[in-house]
Amino acid sequence: MIATEGDAVRFTASIVDFVRRLRGVGVAVSPAQSADLLSALQLVDVLSRNDVYAACRCLLVKRHDDLPVFDMVFAMFWRSP
Image (cartoon, rainbow, N blue to C red; front, side):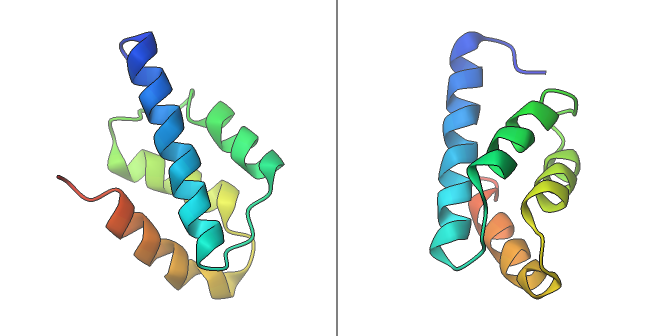
């Protein structure tokens, strides 16, 4: 769960940036998929990298060929600082 409204805004901005990066490397992500992901992330533990990964992968990847690219972008984007 996200603690404050500011945290929610920052997390949403991070998701939007992540989706832009996926699109930038050729993964087709629709606005509807992005909206569905934001809704789904309200139902998972966003502090769990595995839960966020599973939700993102399930809702954003539609082509099997995009899986390796998704995994690479996710690993780079969501790495620990």
